[in-house]
Image (cartoon, rainbow, N blue to C red):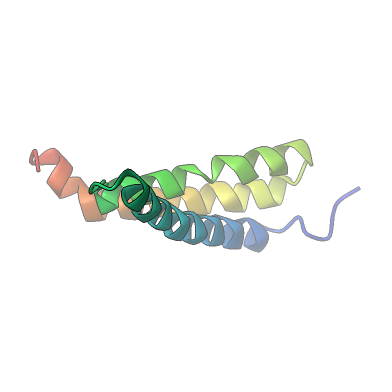
Length: 98
């Protein structure tokens, strides 16, 4: 039986929402850990953004187990688009040794 939530758009929206929420939570977590450790803990924004994009693995597994193939396809497309944008934005610094 095909779920009414098995749509490409659901996967695309899930990939964007999960990444933005994860980015905000990771930034807050780093600040919280800095205050707790009483020293400055710094992650570069490109590292935090990449970790947020990688957290899309969690809903990927959920969609795969529920056989939401269209949503999974949308999630993978959204994740790949964000990873491509990440590489375009930060790739020059990485390739030039910065």
